[in-house]
Image 1 (cartoon, helix red, strand yellow):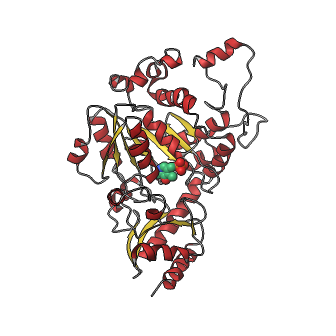
Image 2: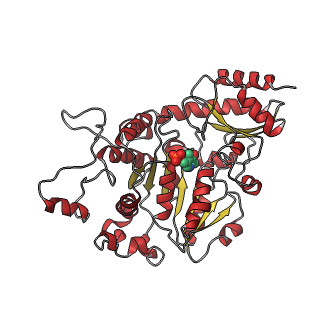
Image 3: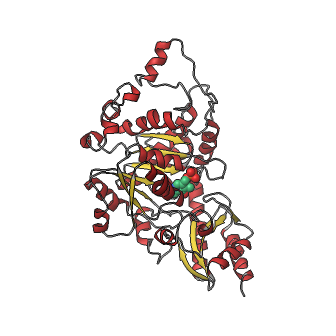
Length: 429
Ligand SMILES: *Cc1c(COP(=O)(O)O)cnc(C)c1O
């Protein structure tokens, strides 16, 4: 399946039924699995043979869907998680522990910013945030001897900045650490960060991958490119025996291709248990089957809406990386020549109050804490997802008081534009 093109992988990746087997992926709704002898089971616990024993660690339905996403990203191993938050937490915590440090882009999703700057900080992990468009000198100055990873988003939610993945990968590798990229907004249809040097990719599958607002989920994919053993001192968790797992040294036993995901499953999933349910994985797979068809339409609709907003006198600014003139237009063209995402951010004349007023007059786009749904939706981040941030953090995150985040769905583009036009008309003084 790995030799096929993206569209074929979306539809058929991860699962090839045998003779007389179900055409659709089976939902293995079972917490546990039966074995004939305790010895058989013991081998599974020792990671001597692969197989299933308890769905907190692994489940066949979830693995089938993870394999599809792995193929789409061009990775060597992948795992599903209960949410995007869990995916980002595991991806970072798998290599950065108490006393360690991570460099992250300042415009990342508010939930991830909070996870890093508040919750993981309490665990003794320090983060230095750098602007995605910082200078090479500023980026280099962010590293410390105890830095274990660099983290950024392909397209930031909701700031819509585009990360120069190649430049961030180069800086990470010069400091002997991997680059972790949250590829939620672009999806592998529009960008495959491994092709630009990223080492680990994460997803909130809740967004475009599911695409129908039906299931919260996440995914971690390993490129298999980062040589942990070559930097063994930096990554003792992967390169020294795990006493909690019968003395296994992940990087030795599973190699570059499998060590990261095996450790995250055997250790973090075992202990934290943020698993995706097989039912949700099944829904996620339905979404993935049409991801390539939907992404193209999301992008087409968003570009039409962005172009309309750009010329409207009641709109003070528009941010959409595929829109000519956008500060990230060149980066978007390089990393995502076929389109970026369906989300457009803009400012409504009259600021915070006008923005909220405008949203109340929309008929098609509903006010929701969500993006990337087949149905258009909108949000005022300053009063919702980002309300825990002070003004300084908001500014660094690229979120102003008048910012409306509009997620263009799969409706008719002209209907979306006419709806926006009537809402702007309604709030005119
Ligand atoms: C939504 C989102 C997350 C968090 O994912 P959940 O599935 O809501 O936990 C992480 N990163 C990005 C870029 C997101 O948009």
